[in-house]
Length: 168
Image 1: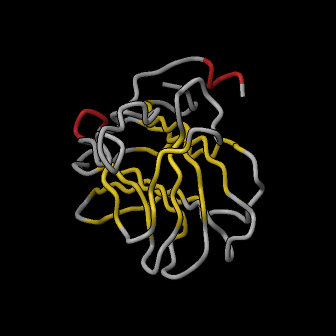
Image 2 (image 1 turned 30 degrees about the vertical axis):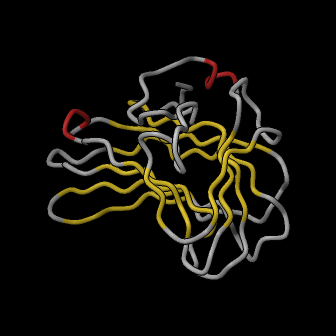
């Protein structure tokens, strides 16, 4: 989409996964026991690689939690450029944006899809951060259920201020 060619300040570190010195992209945390690798052939951008995640016997995902304090009372939008392989069990590629307010954990969610074997943008737009928010987290799942088949490729992730998704 053309609006993603306009850049914004990405609240997430290493949103293009270019820094990948160890077993996980720098600035990100992996949960679950599935496989996570650099993928040099299945990618969209000019980056050297994408990130391939294969679900394991526990839900496998990457996550990052920037501070929400600077975004209190403002809207944020999460955009993820993802490929979901066909052959998964049920919907794969779940994207979640977690945040808190008034003592409760809130979730904006894209439940995932069946594999389409092509990259596309998954967008969670215009989430209003509560005035007392302290937590904010982006979670990118191969599959959110344990022991379910699912393989995804992540090329880019941007969490930006505003209602319109922008690249970063």
